Image (cartoon, rainbow, N blue to C red; front, side, top):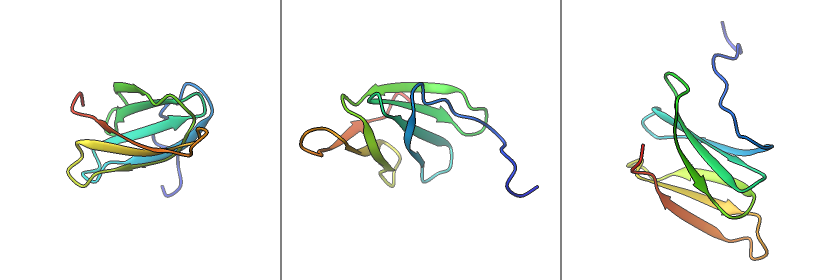
Length: 87
């Protein structure tokens, strides 16, 4: 079936951004409370969390899937990058 929800990935707060890794193995979900949760796509298992420190506006994976970058809705509208080797 096309368009049928297969899995749900909890943000913990209002979800504001999501990005699937280039290898299609993980999904990162950013939230308005400044948290980012990383899940495996296959089984929706939470494999790590990141405290971004500000609401997350956008997320993107580096091509080798070892770094996650994000734009934050802080006073400077800053960008940040996190090592995601825990996954």
